[in-house]
Image (cartoon, rainbow, N blue to C red; front, side, top):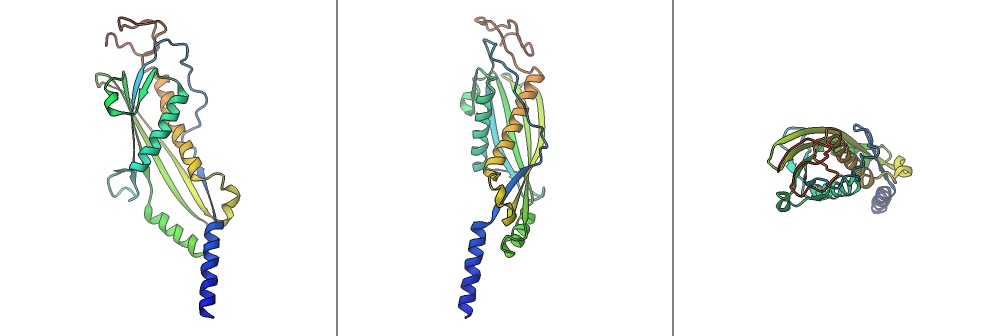
Length: 228
């Protein structure tokens, strides 16, 4: 009898895990970016090294952030997609060795902050209730960006903050299409696009309409850097 009850409980718990849903909701701390400025008319567009990495701190600020290698790889994928779609640069690279050949460097560091203890406690309660009591975990993202020219001169710095809350429980099965696998990269991409928009609005980079064989400025949209 006891074995039958244990088996029933185990089976029910397993089914609850598979039947339970999760759904992620962005805080929209960074307003959605519409269409980025059209730079297609420029004959010469700048080349850019995108120095991207992701760090994580789940200690609630008690420890220094540590690089998250899998997160960095995923973040680089998002950065590359955003860069291709933006079409703001004549050439770009995420390779540090090729970065020295680029006109500008945009250093992007994405920090994921949260509390592992709070998330674990919420998950424990949700699991104990067979996912009837919902639980939630929030990832807080801070994106810092520094723009430098080829000489290493800093042109601007930016900081953006957003977050994604993921809820777990059987009540969120109808929202399973809004999974963290889909929502989180969308939030990251919007943050990167906002950085690109700020760079364009602040006219940090050099664009020219005409060929520039002498490497001089001719009809530019951006800061005049002279010879380089």
